[in-house]
Length: 201
Image (cartoon, rainbow, N blue to C red; front, side, top):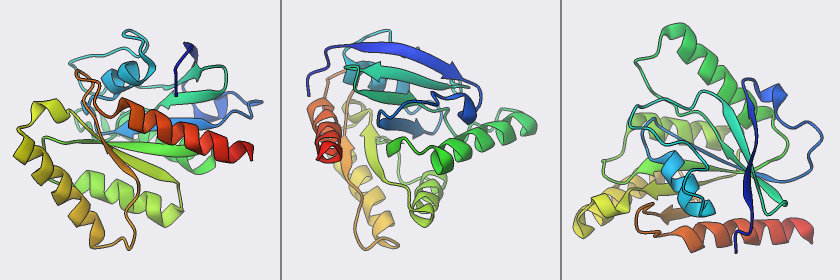
């Protein structure tokens, strides 16, 4: 897929404020705070400043829609698991995420971002298990591949996939990416393009 245009469309504080009349498919990105989500979005779209990056975890508090090629939406969801928020704020974010994931009819695929530098984290495994229970279509994107030695990258990715195999007969599609190197960009975009093509049939 060639990204010709990528433009900010709208930020929503509630899932029911998302574009109401849109029939465009939506591909949403979510992960633990500081997993590299904004950097990945900028890398995929080829727009360095499209999604705001920050060294401070938990900066995305809204649902951000970006219109790609005037054909589909890339959706930046708030990160989960940033414990330094207050209890009330955590509850609000959880409700925001759950409502979007469960109720948004335009959601075509949810990409769950996993930090490839880490061994399997319980919070990620539990989130993916919840997606499976709810029947949400999703893929996994391992981020920050360039921050690992090659053996460590393979060990961590295989470790996470093996943890999933304990509960899943068939693994979801997964991609290994590096925002700095551009690794995995074509694979993720081609996957989205194939789904869009199938939807048009």
